[in-house]
Image (cartoon, rainbow, N blue to C red; front, top):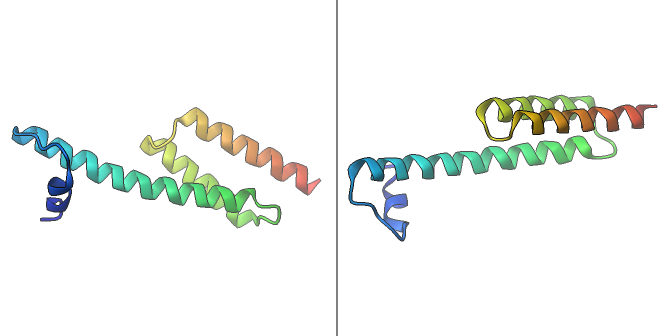
Length: 94
């Protein structure tokens, strides 16, 4: 099975079937969230660079919106980051 390795590497293994399933689900979500967070951070760093292209900014905004929609970051935090990126971009353009 896909999650067998996760079950075997855990220091605590529950006895109840629903608890085992919840543990598998939370571990899978943890792995998925870590990957999405890493992608988001990379895009934000590229957009924050001094010679950032408009495509990099658009990519970062798209990823921020998606992360907020999926609950990876709070919607207000995403809005704040987008606002600050836009402000910085306008400052460098002027």
